[in-house]
Image 1 (cartoon, rainbow, N blue to C red):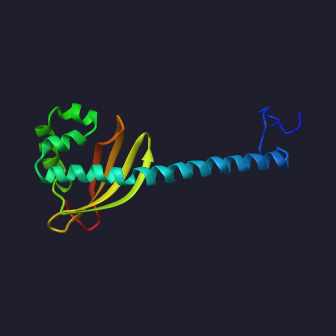
Image 2: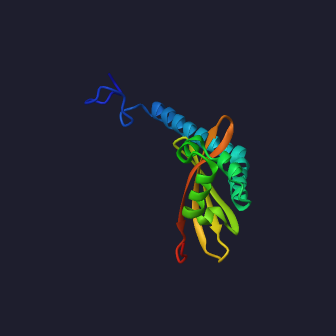
Image 3: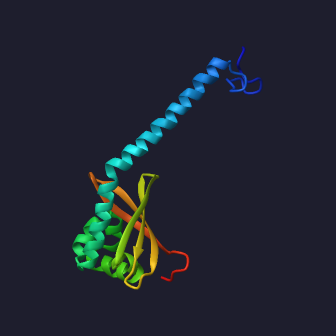
Length: 158
């Protein structure tokens, strides 16, 4: 049978007729474009909501409103810490840049493995910069923060 790979017994790109190769390439490009368009629509539709959730939690930390900050955490985080006071103590001691930033700059958003990752620059009151990557997940139609990683930026100390 013409167009089959001799060893595999199935169609091979190399052995496909030119029109079939063109169809395959056009199809793959179409899938790639649809994926790009879906990511763009996701970003445009959700970027403001995601940033608002992060900002709301930071503002709750600044007001010492543990209940509001804890309510924004994803259920697995709430289960891990059990209550707002324990959660606030953990954030204050482990993530001071998240707990009391002086300035916040939002950077890129990425979607991976069912989570949204939002990069954020946090500047403390002494002018030290840190990069935080927030992980968010959708829970019952609302964005919730499921964790963050904070690291110092080159030349800065945390």
